[in-house]
Image 1: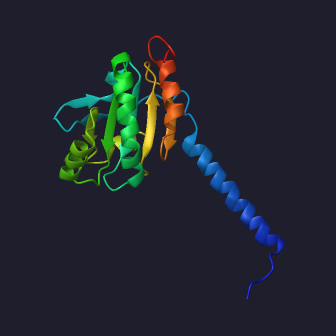
Image 2: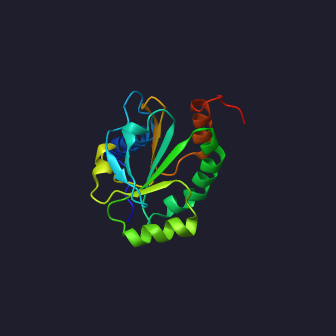
Length: 175
């Protein structure tokens, strides 16, 4: 039997909705003046990358997992952004999560023809340095001076991301 809602049920519902909205705001807000962490990542081809040393050009960092449908769904859009904006100075790094199997990462990179740098965060240190990334996809946009200017948990809004990137690249927002 369905019982009528009481005042306390409405208050509980209001609190739950407020918490959900607060969480969504926190996950998708720009993080302002935070700096890219000085952490190292080994790429699939064996290069050691230090994120802080990559300053000088805007950088898109995306955390993903081979088992994440949203991650796989956004990959073609990221590839398109890379092909369009890398010639203008965009650096892009994909970070596979610690729980991913290296061979699965290589297979997905090959199948999706990912042209940008891919690394495996085998010990979780990169995710921890970027604020304990545990959900995928999680995207960070780093300005040329190392400031993190955009952070998003969940699929990135590619149109917004592209617009923000264009503003950070040399020559501004030309299309």
